[in-house]
Image 1 (cartoon, rainbow, N blue to C red):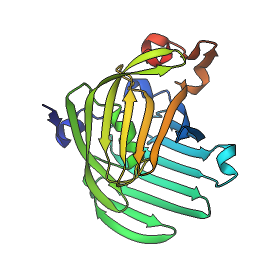
Image 2 (image 1 turned 120 degrees about the vertical axis):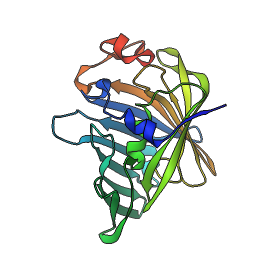
Image 3 (image 1 turned 135 degrees about the horizontal axis):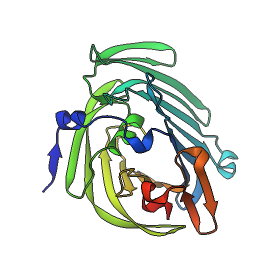
Image 4 (image 1 turned 180 degrees about the vertical axis):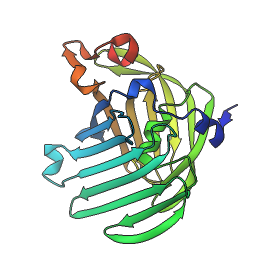
Length: 261
């Protein structure tokens, strides 16, 4: 039986963890129907005193896919580093001939989220703290005390709607990496929409069991196949990244867990 941790419990433990304060960059290869489709990069930090904590994501199509359609999606999020709640979010999307821009400003004191889409003011709606945009929610789940059988619930604002997100740790699995087979926790954030998953999709992450909960694999089940992001490089902080013939390595291996083997 799942033990559910409610909003209050999640908020009580909120704060940017020590491992994230120096900054992080995670680089993934995107594959769809077994074809390499592009690159996904997730970045966060560094944490600076008195400033919001930044998170960013960029997805680009591979040269082969770009011959047919160009994909260039960028997401940015700012979190309150102490209260761990969203302050702002912005995204730019370019997918083929379609493009768009959206920004959200969160007001933690008023408990609202004000949204603009393609230059048009869409107004403000209720968004009680703690609340996250979808990119911030993915980062936040990594700060939780993840273990098989646990479930967490907190609020996410996306598409002009604030709704509860449930994160379920469904079990353990092993993921093959260039450095060997790694034990992982299987985590299922059940989004309504956004970040790599549409309403009809399902998102699953395989994360390391150490405190960083680094996603080694992210799979989105879409109506016409699976979109898979596989970690190829972990930089924490980016300037300390080193490579070897045996695979990805990060300096200070014990601190950063199994993905560094």
